[in-house]
Image (cartoon, rainbow, N blue to C red; front, top):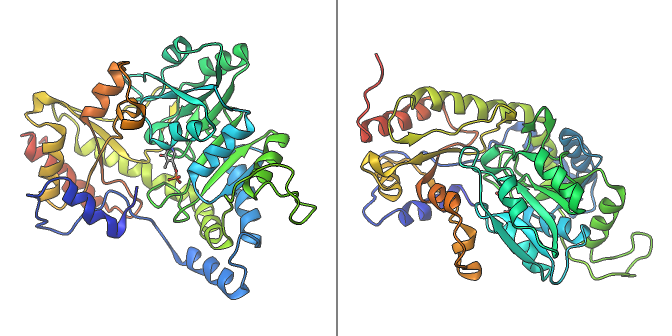
Length: 391
Ligand SMILES: *Cc1c(COP(=O)(O)O)cnc(C)c1O
């Protein structure tokens, strides 16, 4: 998930016959302002570039508060935060962890890091997120946790999962990497389970280049996560390690960017929503194209503006992407189903995951996108799918 210089590689991957005719509209690029520059310079001038520095605690406080959670534990990336969340939830050898078949692969990998087994469940065809009924069907005696992934910025239907987790004494973890600021029935993502994890990868809504955070209101879990983040070292006894931990700390440099970004979070979310509205208007009425929907109980933050291209349009998803690439428009396919990836390949079918993943494309969605660029993307799509602008 890299924007910027890596974008060219992605474009090439879309097909060898895709010369760029016009300036590239990237799928995502970070928005960095004078505020980020100021805090990073402050950090450099102070000499505190390591994880020991005041921006880390400030970022943890500001971000966890923005999520409605009591504690924040900043990490070097989102995958590390997810690993810590499962570890403090007590996931271990032989345990099973329910994850949606449609997610970024890290959600499943972190269960394997702990010698547990990810069990894949199907998704809801409208929200593209974990279907609670399907999750319930996959529980066994060995199930230890459920990971609810708020895909592309749309929250999961959490209420049934909370009941399920409560009844069966399971940990409920939110993978909120793609959805800071989203709400479920008015409550903030990050406050809906036992712990939540975020990613600040460069493509994500709030970025620190690389980075992540575990947020929770459980004091014991936060304390344990801090311990594991720092080699399992007792915070009061230098080089005394009561448990085996990891080196998962965030640097003060990353956190300096993070503090600036969290201070701008509202603005970053407004941009995402404004872009989504403009796409929805620009693509209205195009046949065989499904636009993202938002459930009545959801506050969608549109990390990526994601659409489905149906075969009746005359375009396969990949041909559609190549046609956009030829116009200098960078897109991404949906994450392929995790249960079809080589390490996880099974015979189990997840029909909704498979149908959605085969058709899904994310359009340019970064914070630096202009209205003119969105209009251009919409015009190109309307031309490809032979739909004139409404008069
Ligand atoms: C980005 C992402 C992650 C991993 O985050 P990194 O910071 O890249 O390690 C995990 N889960 C989901 C759903 C993501 O989108």
